[in-house]
Amino acid sequence: QVQLVESGGGLVQAGGSLRLSCAASKSIFSINAMGWYRQAPGKQRELVAAITPGGSTNYADSVKGRFTISRDNARNTVYLQMNSLKPVDTAVYYCNAARSDYHYYWGQGTQVTVSS
Image 1 (cartoon, rainbow, N blue to C red):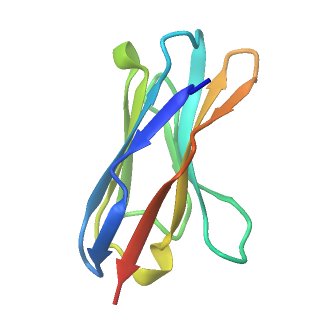
Image 2 (image 1 turned 180 degrees about the horizontal axis):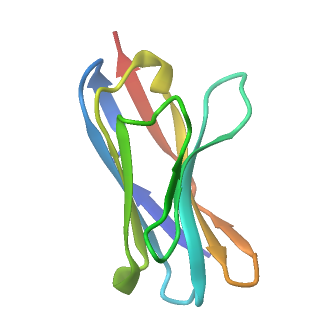
């Protein structure tokens, strides 16, 4: 029952870039907001960025100016461009999609590791 498929994680050096992608299953209808969360060891899962169908965005203060979220509504796909990566960005990143009735879907997570 794969509903959200993530890709693009990996190992990069500090200052480098990665682009994460998340494609929602065609069986999911009426997707509203989509976003990215992350969870580092010993920490709670936190919102990184979110985007509405109309393109309005919201970012965590810690990534503002470095990360950019975007989406392709026709493909039900959301992206996260991550620039100027720091070791503190190391975490498992999870894709999220909210249906219009506020039912939520989660991806399996993709590991992002930033070395110093």
